[in-house]
Length: 208
Image (tube, rainbow, N blue to C red; front, side, top):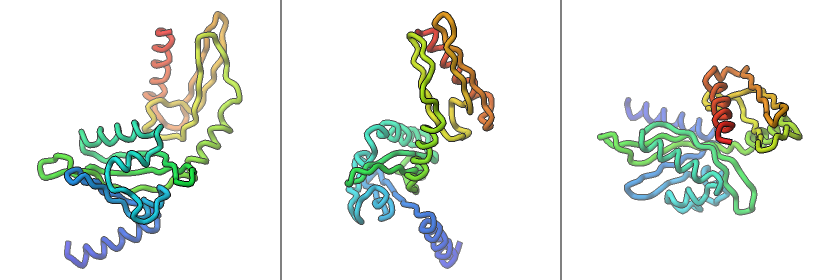
């Protein structure tokens, strides 16, 4: 690719990033530095230049309840260099809660060893608030009660990678202190996710 062609490609990429309001980062493991652009700082409620510039600063910016999962996912990607997706929350200085989705990839040297990560992020606060609203509206006000059994439910938007699938369910208290659960799949998860839940439920019942 010629220098002029690269310039045009870079300009197109910059326009796409700007139009999508994406933030970006690059983490260099050797130097221990992480570079955020101003858009990513803005997503975290920080002024330009307000990010500390280290991996530890990124961890500190994560919501406490999301830190372990995010760190684990990045570690997995580093062990087997590949693209990855993170969804986490962050608390702004004013106390407001915001959700950010990150799509990153692992950088490697000529020998295939990881040297860091780079990627883009987008603010999905509105989307996650809608999910929460749907969750509250779709879930029942009260669940069946059976002694020794705790039943919980959570709404998740249909997605093929969900390991435990089921687009509808019915839970019924049965005689003898038992509970019956029926699960249906209509969103194309396939047989495996819908089979995973009953196996785990059965294991829990045996454990109880």
